[in-house]
Image (tube, rainbow, N blue to C red):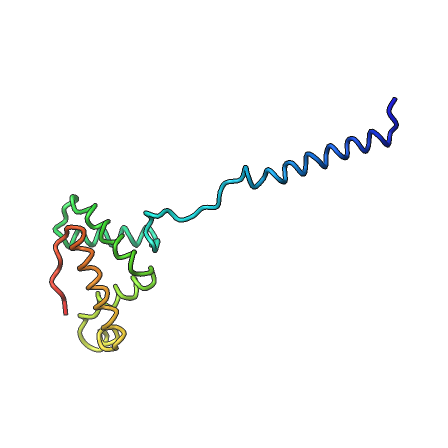
Amino acid sequence: MVPLIAQFLTRTSTVVAAAALCWCALPVLADPPQSPRPDAPRNDYPTSARVEYVQECIAKNGGNLADLYKCSCAIDRMADHLTYDDFVEAGTFARYSSLGGEGGAEFRDPDRARERAKLYRTLEAEAYRACGLKVAAPAR
């Protein structure tokens, strides 16, 4: 018969060895850290914003479903150059800069508004050209 203390030490050392083995193996067995895909857009916009842009783009270009891929290409190119917040700001200034009266003055008169609207229109025109869409005539 083995003394009780010897049994205890054997079991304890086995448990400690098993725990150490599991602890050491954890980094090897764990999933590697996720790095961004190299082909992923630099700035990930919400899906709803991308869908809204693509639908407006298709409507602007005649409503052909064939333009779906071209318009998706355009928003991807815009996302490569603007963060989502910058995209929203610049798009808002570009869209509402043609409003008349005092209400439109906020979107057309400040220097920042003009710069952001111009940037948006330039990036959109470049994206349209690169993706095979008709470049719209500048609004202003």
